[in-house]
Image: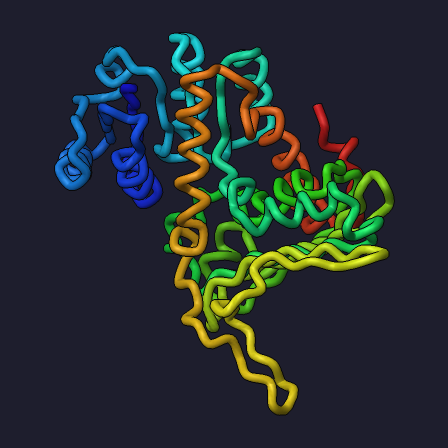
Length: 331
């Protein structure tokens, strides 16, 4: 099949390598606002280049992968939908709720997949199955963490939409997906002890949130941009019969203070791309399956909207220092 790739920055270049290696992808065509960068990536992975988005969308594509800057997601996705081209879009679908709702209405039943790669990680899938099979009994507590070893550049933070929308939205999505429950209320806070550019952007470098799910179970979400020990992403499901953890392996950047207990022997993950490398392959393989079969999306625009609602409620809770029901931010 012929797949187009719009945007070859950090994640786009990574996707280019993955797509070029997939058996289903016979032709990969890339485009980027930086033509020099597009040519360099294309040469590296053996892809073709398009002079721009117009040329890319008129290249007889079977599918389009959108990895451009955030403000380009909604316009590109809308153009793909209108052209009848199945599309994969990195999160967020749009920079705000109104934009996401507009895309959702435009999409209808169109084949669109949103990039929440944790849904394709073996650990998260195994935890979900354990809960579904009844191995854990009823779950009373969920704990999710996303701890970055170092912050991204100041310019990125200024355009990111804030840590809840940019980072913890992955936790919100995976909590919904693993538990099969909806989040009905949040209480969130955040702090800044690092670089000044977080506060200057109205953002935080560390956050925590308590989420109430629709079965009255509780989830905690914590995140930081300053986890010097390494990249640490985990999920714990604590149940009435058993408990299970995702991310508890030899590369966990956390040592025990108990005597005689060795710390994990592996080298900590340096970043999300290395941690979730197999999940990214599985995610884009699922997209090529969607292109070929036209079946249900493994992560729809509606799913992305639900995670965005939680992020929006958390940001409001942080700013106003109060619990926020999800009903308050829904449109």
